[in-house]
Image (cartoon, rainbow, N blue to C red):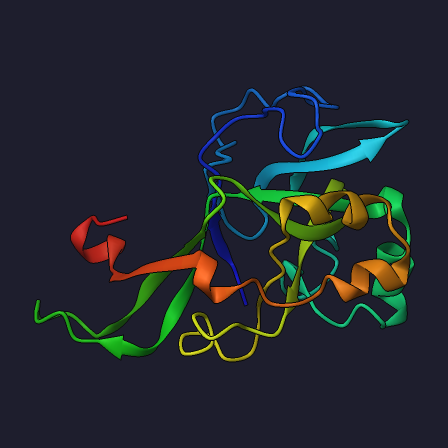
Length: 209
């Protein structure tokens, strides 16, 4: 499950979008789109009224209605998710520059402190890569989730259950406008040969990012 990611950039003309926001950019100092964590606010790209542009939403598609933030969804056929995934107006793209999975085992850093899991950071051949997602209005505003799929051979040794669904640029139109069957067909692992990974890093101990 991906619960850490980064987006190092601001709205720009990617994937046919305009470099503008549907809503006003948050002015409070708690808004940090570079670091994505559950319940944090982040950028997404969506369509409305024939316009494709950026928006700011909370990374929890259920808006706090569940015990844990709903940041990742895989079973698109379940009724609660299909009703969103089958509607183009509820689909979005989550722009990222890298995402994190934690190592399965804890590491002893030899500093006299308890062992801990390391962060493995994955990036792709795309400077900013599009992740399949969908969104809805919640009691607190708007919330989104990322769609997951089977892991590829690069991600699987770190997280064998799933990885986020990274799209090729030419598939963005299909994700935002296609039929339900067409978008389900895009729910597949990204080519591992087009990805790199770095780590493990231990930012809470060493200051590495």
